[in-house]
Length: 390
Image (cartoon, rainbow, N blue to C red; front, side, top):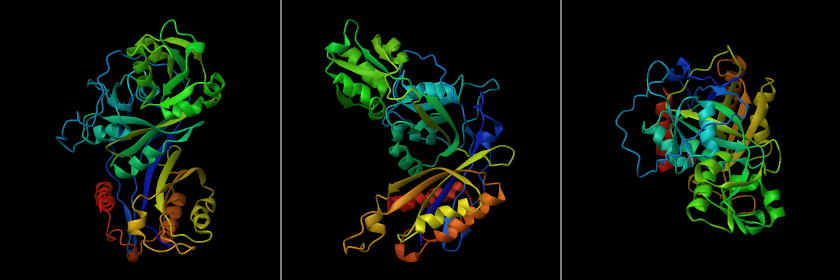
């Protein structure tokens, strides 16, 4: 019943997304709790719940950040929040102008300057390197499920969840002017968008081809003047790239909502003055009922779990040698991500994580990293980075 690592990210769950970041968005780091044989890090963040699908204006100018174009980091100091005469917050999102993620970024931070990035990794690195102030990235969709890449990147990067929003996604089938639905043979879009429109695209008999983002698909169709190829994207993308909308709301269900995380360099401090959501990640030894016992620490305290996700450890075969029940080399060990509705400032949540920490205690035979006192989130991130790079 031992673990390779335990980590938590804490976030309050508010009823709306503020137009301007609060001062608590620049709160100092929280001291972390550490035992002799395990370590737990704590991060605080604000989750804004905003379920409307307000449209957002977009600009046709689109200078996309790539990993090669990111400047070197000049300072580790956080970029000040805007709102008192300063320039607007620069908020990174993945995709081109007209992507649904751009609208989500503008919904999360009204009056911000959206900054398109070619990859999810680029958005993470842009925040870390102070090229932008925030990132707004998808984590799951009500039809397509979890965005696993961002789960993995949350573990590998030193950013804090400071909020979340829910954005209602409405997909359109786009094509060049004069092209009819019956002329189309294939359709381009992001894999998640294609999955969310699976039934409609199957009924139309269209071959699906995945690309990096929805707006990029629209741009490609427009630039290449394709007559047998459409794109699944937003109505804003149709306007930007001069495409016709052949069909609206082609998603498989009318309620198609994507949950986006708002990420920053600095955490905020959890409190008890409003509802909070806490996200944790941990690993466990295999054994009958082990996961049940781990989750029971929340049920015993009437803490509601809202999400659980497992991801395989890419380093598991190296870090956890041994044989499985059939006598073969163990190749799969898992990290468990869980969200629950409680603040780390509450006694129940503290006791639940203390009990979980005992169950996920580090054992030296795993050879992960030396247990040591953890004094700040940045210290923990350094240890984690060293561990992942071994």
